[in-house]
Structures are given as C-alpha cells and as structure tokens.
Length: 612
Image (cartoon, rainbow, N blue to C red; front, side):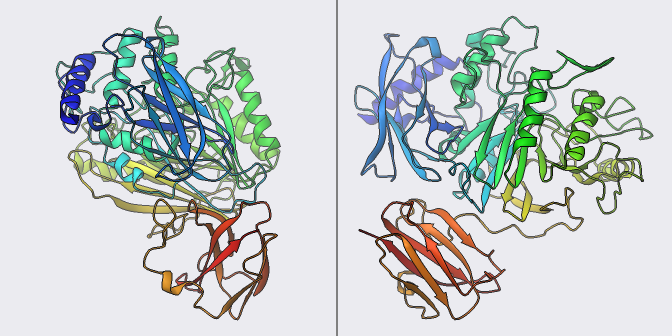
C-alpha cells in the first residue's frame, strides 16, 4: 500500500515540477504528501519557526495540518502543538512559530495531515536565554548553492554535525539561471530564468528534491538572507512575488509586518555573541551618506546596524552579510585576472568605499571590539583583516595585523564556480593567489578553487573559523578540513599562524543524538574517586564539586545533550579545585559532568541528579 501511494505522489510531483530530475534528485516519497521534508529557522530562546510543504492535493482545497514539538525523538511527550492551514495562497507551505519552548534545548518536530500521514521528524535547537553566560557556540556558514553546478555534498556533511547551533546562509540559496560553464546537474527541459511567481515557487520546490539539502534543513535551524540570485532584478515586476516566495520556502521570521522587504534582523546568543544579519541587496543605492557618495545599506539600516554594534554587551558581534567587505584591489595585476582593472567587483563593498570607511571608522572611534563579518557571494575563500586604509603602512601592518579594526571570513561557495570554472588555466591559479595577496596586505589567507563551507567556533576568549572543502563533481562522503584561523578577544585581527587540526566539537563526545543514552561508558560513571560532588542528589539544585587535581569540566543536560556550562577549556584546566554548580533555575533531572586532564583527554564522568 505504501509503495502504491509513493508511486502516486511520484507522478504528482513529476507533473508539478515539470522536469526530468537530474542526478541525486528525488522527493521523500516515504513520507508523502510531505515529500519536500521539514525545516526550521530563526531560533529564539523560547520559539523557533518550523516549516513543511505538501504536494498539491488533487482537489486543490485547503488542508489542515497538525504540528507537534517534543523534547525527544520518540515524541513520548509533546511540549508544544497546534494546527495550521495550507493552501495555494502560500503554495502549500506551512511556516509555524512554535513557542512555549525552553532556551538552549534540542527539540524534535513533525507534521501530520488529516489522513494520518506523518512528515519526517525534524530536529532543531533554541537559542540560549538573553544575558545567559553561554560559553560555546558553533555554527556553519554557507552561500552560493547552485544546484546545477554540482552535488550538495557539503550540505550532507553539515547535516551530520549534530553539535551545531544553527546554519547561517548568506545568500544565493537558489539560482535563477544555469551557468553555461558549470553544467553538472541540469534537468530536462533546460531551466529558464523564473519570470513569474509560480516559476520562482517551482524553482524552490525543485531544490527540495535534493536529499542532501533537505537533510541539512531537517537537522539544524537556519538563519538566512537573500541575495541577487534568490530574487529578480530590483526593477523586475516579480520582485515582491519572489520575496514572498522566499518567505514561503525558507523558514524566516518576519520582523516588520508593515514592510516584508525588510529582512535585516538580529539575534542574541546570551552574553557570548550578538548576530546582526544585514541586507545589502535591496537597500543599496537608495540613500546618500555624503555628497556624491551613495550608501550600501540605506540610512535606516545603517543607523540600525551602528546602534546595534554600539549597544551590544555581548563578547562578540557577528555581522552576516551577502557581499565581501574587504578591499580587493587588482591594480597592476595581469589582464587575465578577473575584475575591472581597479577592483575585483563593484557589486561588493568595493563599490561603496565611503560607506565602508565610515562604518570601519565608526567601529574604531567607538572602541567596538570583536566584530566579525561573515560574507558570501564571491565564490572564493577569503580571510581578511578590515582597516579603513589597508595600504597605508602607518595605519595598518599587514605582517601582524596591527591597525585592523575588525575581521572578515568568507568560506567559498557550496557549489557555484570560482576561478577554475571561470576558465583561468590551472598553471595560473597558484600565481593568482600570490599576485592578489601581494597587492592586498590585509588578505591574511585566500584560496580560489575549492568548494565547501565554514565552521565558526565561538568562545569567550577566541573565535576559530574553519574551512571545510568537498568535491562537487560527484557524490562522495569525503570532506577535508583545510585550515583554521583564530581571532583573540580584543585583538581585532586574525592570528598569523593557521591551525592545522579542527577544534573540539561543541556538544558532548559520548552522547548520541537523542542525548538519552551514554555510549559504552556507563561503567565509568561515578567510579572516578578524584572528583567528589555533594550533595547528590540535591533538592535545591546546588552542588559542591571538589577535585584532587586540576581539570576542565563540561556540564551537560542528559535529556537533550545541551552543554550548560564549561569550567576552563578542554586542555586548559579550571583554576579552582573546589567550586559550586548552580542548577536551581533548571528543571529536575539528570545531568552529566565530564572532566578532562590538561592534555584535553577525557578523564571521567559524574552523574548529577537534581530532584525534589
């Protein structure tokens, strides 16, 4: 019976997308009519947007869906639920702001139709409480994912990293055209650029036939912004329809109901970091910041960004934006090097020098430390210091970073072509990097041919930005850690020594995804006599920890695998041999204290029980 239903829905979806699917493209027929999967986005401490889409019903009538959120994958208990109607006005998509959730928790969600069909189970995570002393955040940053240019191996690898807080997509989530030089996965008939709202919807639906993209959306909440391939030209009559379609298919919270074109917004991750997502695409060229100098952000958004930066009390200020911020001069480079002979591209911040310099000087003059710009669009890897005058040796020193006021990290494209796909001969590619860095001293590291994503590891004392690369020409389970780069608290430039091994993951090493079972290490619990915890159980949630040695510690909520506190850093012992753990504000249950020796090796475990 299930196979018959799957065949019926295969025929339905084939007619809907009106295309012969390319390689590794198929719907989730097992969970029909939820063949497009589930997703979540824009996590807050007490809520998150959950999403799904159903195949168009044969009767074309509105359908009622039930949604459920649970704190375990088996849905033994439902913590939030409700119903939502889906119909043709939103192309049969559902975006639900699921509330009444606890901060900094992993949750599971699903949808059900009136016939009793369930969607696949999604997994998401809420943000920590406002002001919370969160000590570690870890997220992926991606951009430029042309489904025609290659396989989404990077998305699959991202989906497997269960310790991520979220995925940040910095634009060009879908592509409006097929690049003639990058025809790796092209359906038949040959795709044309969307010219109607329904065509934009069909493009989004086609993307969700990719199982690797669906899995990355299913496993992590996303924080996304659009860019020039997600929307038509700003003067196109279908612009607002394409924006509406983006909101229909990408789980994104609308923060200004009176102006849904406003996608810039911000998020707090406790005292550790504030995130500001800005929109260059739709706000540039609308205001002048000075005579003869038009702005890139528009005055309203620019003033909003400066205010957010000034008022932030978080340790780190993360700015997500579509375009490269740093200068990229090509003056004096050979004619085969891309660009207009002056800069690589004027569609980035290089086309708005006055606005960029004003922002960087604002950061400098107001003593705003620890600003990191995460960027997309350029299809290359770029790790750069940001200075208002990077070629002035009196203002900035490229050898050590002195004079930098902020930093930038751009971790290449998911699939979209870069220098080698542009047709630059392979024997010139290595030379291109050397020539470019020679005239751009603030470019700490660059790479022009790889594809993949970035991982950002945020701690109070450091940010480590990692480059992960994978093949795009064939399906593969392999990926390569390339390099890591470090920002230190208060320094405002990248360290000049790159890291050759990835950083430690965020969540506990020995908890499975459901975070309810400890793998093969139960015998170690409470057997290590070097650490004593009392009282245990505790009725008021306060525990004294005493150790014979100096360890670093990680405290985990066993119910969901969330790291609550860290004392010291793995490999760097905590300064106290005796301290208190306060769980008075947390729910009753079992918690796990892991401790590590000075080498960063796991030394033992203690179960902590908060009970009445």
